[in-house]
Image (cartoon, rainbow, N blue to C red):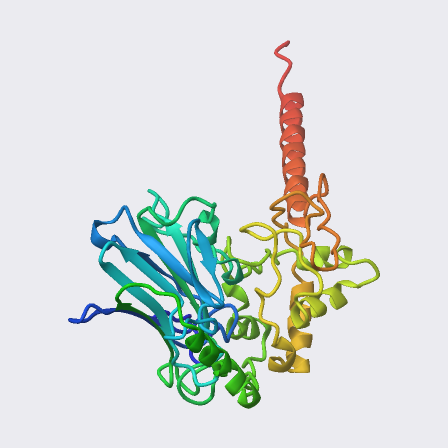
Length: 400
């Protein structure tokens, strides 16, 4: 269980993840992922991942075949398979792995009633260092890991590793989204990847293909009944500190004494000083408000882990914050006049978004606290000099 120091429903990162590996007497294998709670980034999509080192029949000579529309095709090179749920063989599988007389078929067990859950599955050759130790995951939509290891090497004939990344959007019971209500233990999201022993792989007959073409997909059957997203809960708090705490701002940003460094979002400790220079013809107050209510409009130049990316910051604050809370939060951020952390060269912006002007370099301009300290030191030295001179002049000349 992981939770912030706030409690449901005001925590942004309040959730529990469960993983289960099941082995059956008939040779079946299941990997299950269960998620309780709203998560940290996109509040309705979860992207866990499994690394499955096959070692079929001892490893080293695995074959992989993927279902591609109307036939099984050998995976000769490393590949990313997506979609993984809707484009299936007549018997409901997407992938076949074979080594000699050992053969398995892979499918994702559909547990969501709306047919919205999907997955990415990567077929990679086993290489030392690729997923053997702790991993630093990138933003969810980059699929890193394992996409950074997809380099076109030969797949079939090697020791293969499967990376399975499900995209959980719905769950078994209402409401149909990964936002349990009223507690994280209620109606969790879950997904299962199943591998089943199978015989010789064969191509489908014309009759099987005709039946497959006439069968509607789960997505088309349920698209008309998809439920709208739930109404997000209002954020509690009246003071700026309470609002920042309950909205989860400190989970991604450093804001003066609030939050922690090296998080996902840019340092806001000097946002009141630089906001007016970010976007032409936009005041500091306008820029701060726009950044909260529509965070994808203008991307800050740099973030702690690289260029700032769209769709990381929640985009529902316009309906979760009241006008009074927005006024309080904006006024507080305008007071943030500290030294900004310039992470990279100015001018770097996300190319898909309107460009925001970079934060100005402060150069020789010193903060008021530094100027005050320097002035005090100069006055102290001057006083010591004058006192020493006065004492020297008061000394007797030594001539009587």
